[in-house]
Amino acid sequence: MLRRPVVGIVAVASTHDGSLVLIRRQDTGQWALPGGTVEWGEPLEVCIRRELAEEAGVEVISVGDLLGVYSRPDRDFRFHAVTIVVRAKVTEPVRPPKNPVEIAEVGLFHTDELPEALSHEMTDMLHNALKGKVVWE
Image (tube, rainbow, N blue to C red; front, side):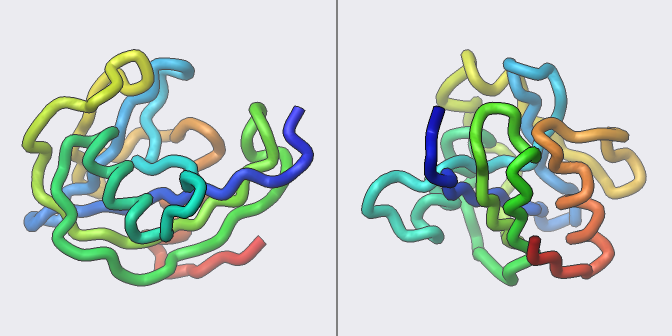
């Protein structure tokens, strides 16, 4: 068991028409915000650009506002995660996910057709971001 929090970053990523990019995880079968853990020596912006390319197959146009920091220890069953949520403008997917063992598919959703619940306790992260509510926990 890890005894230190793991830092990750996810994006509320939207395309030119306002569609949101979500990934379907293989481990839970649920949709999630794209992102992942920061590698040693990696700046946050480099991390989110890498993760969006790897998981969603998109190119990042811009990384924008900080939308929240979530650190409640029970959010992730695997470890104590500190998740930073940012806004990003991206292209539509230009290639499949790099790791099909981790990511089953990539989807584009308008806000009125979002899945009811997201994996890894991300539902409130997305809803808070869409409401413009910045959360620090």
